[in-house]
Amino acid sequence: MQRLRSRQQFQVAMAGSPVARTAHFVLHRSPVDGPSGAAHAAAGRPLFPVTAPWLGVVLPKRWARRAVTRNAIRRQIYESVRPLTGQLPASVHVVRLRAGFSRDQFVSASSDVLKRAVRAELQQLWSRAGLQVATGNPSHVG
Image (cartoon, rainbow, N blue to C red):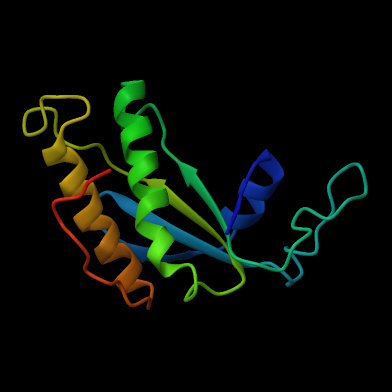
């Protein structure tokens, strides 16, 4: 699993229509070797030098104001995709937060309750994208 680093990589990945949605997340997918995947950076190097699954995360401050919350959500996203590595197609994937989690319901910026809610919704997102999510230990929230 490769991670998206540059703005150009994120733009290519998010150019297509979303593959799956939940109440708080959207999954965008774009082929690595397609016309957009073959795009080259300004230096003449390919944007995606390896034909493998790529993953990026977009967490706007608009929907998660506190850095602690954004970092907790980011960790949950990367941990939720770890068991799916063998199932992911060689494409560029971006998980984008599209709505905020209620501060009334999740008072703490990084609580176990918030992490479990994020993890459950991410499992829904991956299953809606056609990936089989193994239900592991739900008490482990990382």
